[in-house]
Length: 218
Image 1 (cartoon, rainbow, N blue to C red):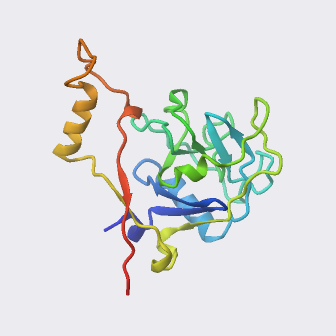
Image 2: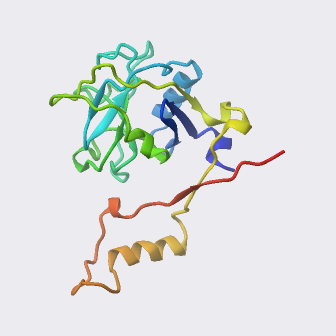
């Protein structure tokens, strides 16, 4: 059964195109449940990416566009992961200095950010359409505040979208001998200019492949 069928895929619609997001209830069940609830309510529709920093991330999910707003629901307890890392396309829950202050705001990473690992909740990963995230209007200054920001057209759980309008994505399994061999090849390249095998590989250097599935015709 696909993530789309189980309701763990999001369709984030931007003016530039559709972004497909794989949610991670295995890492952050409370945050994923919150995102699903707010999507069902249309909460994110027309909300801005109010804070966007080149080479770092694009932050949205605040209807007020000030960075201090959120939903009327209670804040969420932290669901930090010591295993999953912040890499390109990772989606984290924004918060204040209080670890248990995440509500509705989120950010999408343009690049890896090891300093965030274990400090913020990860609830999703972009699997398709990262090129559209890259086109989001950047902010200015150290805070990345955006004037006349780009906005989310709408964000929906894929299972709630008519089947003919869904984007189906197949993601490479990571529990197979093939993937293990791929990681080993990245860890110790057999050829090239390496004199001594590295013996390790950064998690951001091991990309998990994905591909769009063809739409069924009826």
